[in-house]
Image (cartoon, rainbow, N blue to C red):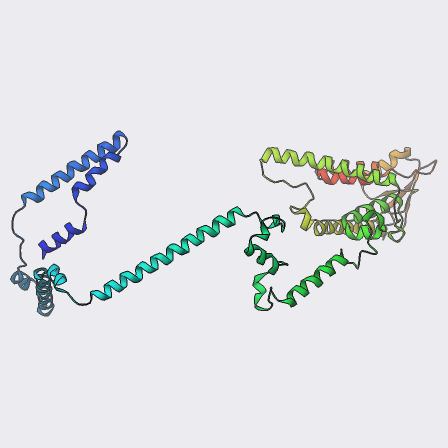
Length: 410
């Protein structure tokens, strides 16, 4: 059995002299040296195998019977070994080549199989030629957007039929519910095309009443550009102190110029901040302060929340001032802290008079002697607030401070 296994292995594996030729492909001194050592080891193994001429040892069953206590398992192994050895010996003794030569009947089936395979090969070659011809024609044809009935389309019946059948684009996922080549589908597409031609923007605008954007009233412009409406409305309310219900149809051109100038001032500060962060961190994308990452999709919601937050803070501040009658005390100096008390006395050297509205009002009012107080400038108020925040260890964000200062300038 061992000899038979060695013979079968020799038949299955390639000869040693074949892989020796691979030495020609070894490049470099290290690879050549490794291949030389490998061939030396192969020669040593071959010489050892050649010197071993002793016959193959048989299994000593008597020795195994004395060592294994389970006689039934041993007997099963012995019978299986004897059966397999006898089967392999019988296979080796048979003359397979002679049996093939003695087979005379049944060759017509083999011949028929050869003829069938030949026909299949011819059919495959024909399909291959037709596919190559179709690819060549498709490559030589111009793209669909270059179709011209005055040139090659008249001679190419395939593309002519394609153009005639497919007037409109069709999503073939919906082919189960509609036929893209039916007359009903063509009528539907024509009706949709006419509807889209007659109505442009979804607001009932047709060709008869269509106007350009600059010819339309401003409310349609603001309906389309919501961000511009918020910007202009904030400027109008801050500039005039009026009511949103009296927002003009068209603001003066000087106001538009002032809006643009204010916007450029704010973005000048934000862009410098963005540039510093971009150069220091080397990030691929950096957004402006107080801006969302996706301005196109998230800008409206982001600035809506920002305006709502500023509105809430302003309402809380105004409510606190109104609760202590501080908001409209223009002719008096409200005093709620020791610093405010000291500055009130410095206004006229302490010659004025303090007034109190009762114990439930947490504020004193100082009226300086002499002329009435002038209305303070909003920018001076912002400067005082910013100085107070800086002296108490806090500071406004640069972009917020720039926007706040521009707001006070308006």
